[in-house]
Image (tube, rainbow, N blue to C red; front, side, top):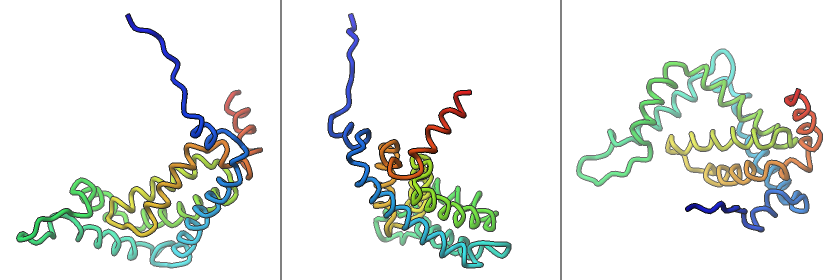
Length: 183
């Protein structure tokens, strides 16, 4: 009744994600995204409001601004499309605001680590995933800025992880990791 079909990807997608001749393009994308993360993270790591034992005021202000973008603050006389959904606002209120020092250090350190990993081309797919995940959270908190661009490029880096790190440390790191995990 049912026939077996072999589904193949498009030649264009295979070229972008598997052909090393496109590696220079992915190198440029990877360096751009990595630099953006490193610069943003470095600004936070060197700021005591974001990183260290006194961290927390900056993320508390950021979350407070995000909470003001919910439907709760929408004027009743206007049709409102809030920037921050109620479920995400609940997450911010119940999980982020009670622990500002932890989240602040995590964000600042995570941005630096993602930036360095992408710049060096070390575990590119994993670094791109965590970068895109942070971009998603920033967008869910109502911050647009460069986040949609970095999110889109991060998704591309995740899909092309084999080639994106080819001109970088992944060329040597990934085979070593593969041997280690096959044991």
